[in-house]
Image (cartoon, rainbow over all chains, first blue to last red; front, side, top):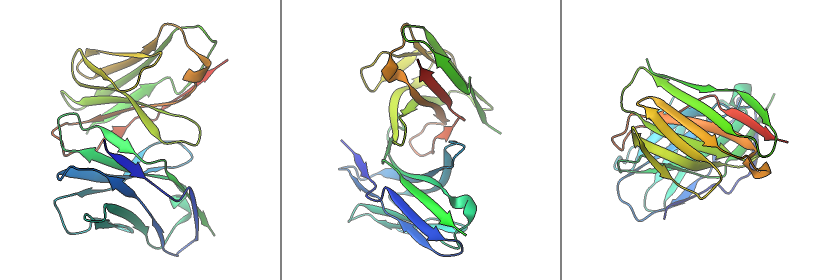
Length: 115
Length: 113
């Protein structure tokens, strides 16, 4: 069975600085997808970024980028130029490539951005 | 564009009462549909998923059930609520195919008294 681990329950960063959130996972699959979701205080779940395991190139979305290390089963999220609106819970999620598309979530990291 | 609607947003129910939460998706056909529960300060736990009408898979044993009476409608139900059913419930969809991310509704905060 697959597992996703986020070892940082809470993180904080000053506005305009850079922060990295960690995520590791365990799987025997070779073909899968990884995601970072953001849950602000409104509790909406918002997709931040996705990574296909077969792609070596790290995904980027504006200020958000990932460091995907397939051999190490690591998938960290880097937020550059942090903004107050980045304050949220961040969840790492794993999806095996099958017809169910089930997501397995980590326990989340609460990120606080300070002015 | 595709949208997902989930209601009600907030619900307070007494122990032992029935439950019905509804989720509908617009702008797509034959989506995969999912129900998650999020306990306070915790991650998301998958409760049910459906890859087609009438097809329901349960991930954890529980007091809840799910149904998919129409292609884009997913309902979470209970005949008798327990205190442990309290939590934040999220519905999600994706287009299937093993490559697409899930998109979430706004959630229902359920409090059991």
